[in-house]
Length: 261
Ligand SMILES: NC(=O)C1=CN([C@@H]2O[C@H](COP(=O)(O)OP(=O)(O)OC[C@H]3O[C@@H](n4cnc5c(N)ncnc54)[C@H](O)[C@@H]3O)[C@@H](O)[C@H]2O)C=CC1
Ligand SMILES: O=C(O)[C@@H]1CCC=N1
Image (cartoon, rainbow, N blue to C red):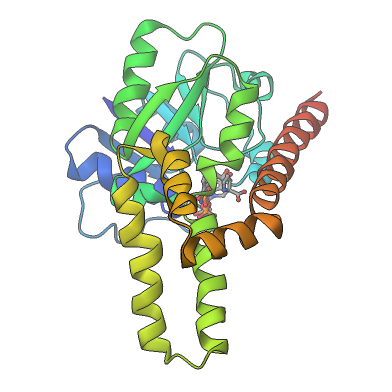
């Protein structure tokens, strides 16, 4: 399989290109704005321009920023086109003339641990679905969603990758600094709380509410903290944040559809 990545040296495109080569899943053809550069010593093909990338690729991955889509003027009739762009809908993508599929990876692609849900547009075949699963499988797990609106929800949630854990870590670091804990000690303590504790939940996230209840029922110090967090609106703040991000993704999809006519 030959996979062409537009934006192949960016954050996500780079992670995908490196994984496809390292796992020997595909020949990789790249296009970026700055031209050929070192790809960590990996053997890749650099396209001369967009038309060259399209001609050389079986599957085309669009990994440019949403605001760069309109200027790209991609024409890819007969090809499978996988877009990573937030807020560029299937109907807008279809104007490239290819069979289009939207995927929403996250930054954990860097460590092969993205969760990449996707939705398929009209005309996408069973063979295309298998190709998409193979491409997205290079950077982690993937699954097809039943409707496009759910991709906007996932853009807000899993698409944000480490953003919310980082926000939690930031708040915890600020608390420890305020209490006079040395920065290196604080970093170790927060790492244990945010990262190591998260590993405890791996494979059993559905049991998270039961785990919270166990701490509440313990009636100890953690219970005092959790009850105050909820009283201060912790869950409501999470829901509001995800709702705002979903709304923004939907508004982007609508604006991009309108701009595309
Ligand atoms: N970074 C993230 O965590 C996530 C990003 N996304 C989506 O993935 C897409 C890519 O995001 P990032 O990798 O973060 O962006 P990025 O800014 O790191 O990479 C985009 C790349 O596209 C290149 N580019 C722009 N216009 C081009 C053109 N006309 N021809 C060739 N190359 C061009 C840029 O030079 C840059 O290297 C975005 O649309 C974003 O919405 C989706 C989920 C998570
Ligand atoms: O923040 C963003 O816009 C990117 C796209 C989806 C998730 N992260």
